[in-house]
Length: 298
Image (tube, rainbow, N blue to C red; front, side, top):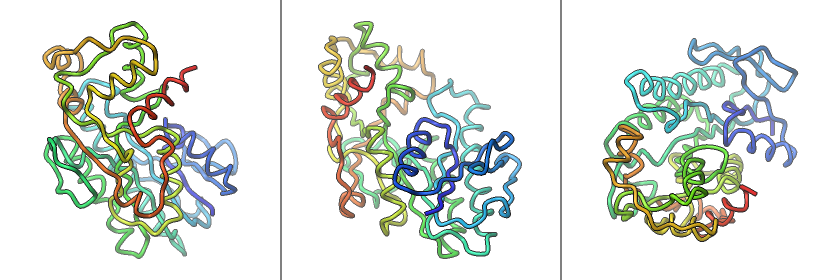
C-alpha cells in the first residue's frame, strides 16, 4: 500500500514507518518543514494547510499527531495545545484525504484509553461508556473529527492506546530513571489498574489495523492489565532494583500538577476487538512488557 503517516517523527511514528517500509509498503510522511525528498509532504495542521495534490494516490493513512500529554505541567495554555494539536491535525488530514479523487480505504487514527476516564474496577472493552475528565473530553473531540471520513465510506479505526512502555519517552522514561536510582515503587496505594502496551506491540497493532476490517474504537493495550503495584514490582524485578517505596498522591500532585490525576486513574482495559480479529501480542502482561522494557534500555 501507499500509506500517509503524520506524527512520523514521534515515539511511535519512527518505528512504525520503519516497520511499514520493511513490510514493503510505500510510506509518505507529513512534515512541518520543507520536504527533504519525494517521501515527504509539507503541511501546517494548525493553519489547516495540506495540499491534496501533493499527496498523490493514497491507499491508507495513519494519524499520530498530537502534543505529548505528560511532557509539561498542565497549564491552561498547554491543555489547549494538547486538544488543538489533535483536533487540528485530524481535521486537516481528513479534509485533504476526502478531497482526493479516490479517498483511501482506511484511516487509522490515534486515540487513547483516556476516553474511559477513571473507571475503578470496571473491565473496559470498546463498548464501555465514555468517562469524564480532561483527557476523556480531548478524546471525544479528537475522535469526532474522523466522522466525515467514516461517513464518506473510509474505514476508520480509532486506536485507543494505553500506557506505551518505551525507554525513550512517555511515562516509563521517567519511571526507569527513578528505578535506576533505587527510588522506584508504587504510586499512591498502587491499587489502580494500569493498561500497558510495549512499543513493538503498539507498532504491530497499528500495522494490523491497516489490513484487518476493524472500525470504530479499538483498544491497544496488552490483554492482561495489572494494578500499579504489580507493574512497579515487575519493573523492579526486570531491572534488578528495589521497588519498595511509595509515592504519596500529594507528592505526585506537587510534581505533576493536574496530570497526577490521570496517572492515578484506574483503567482496566482489555483489547477485545484486537484479539478477536486474530492479533497476537508479543508482550501480553506486565511481566513480559517490563522485561522487554528493561532489555530495550541495554
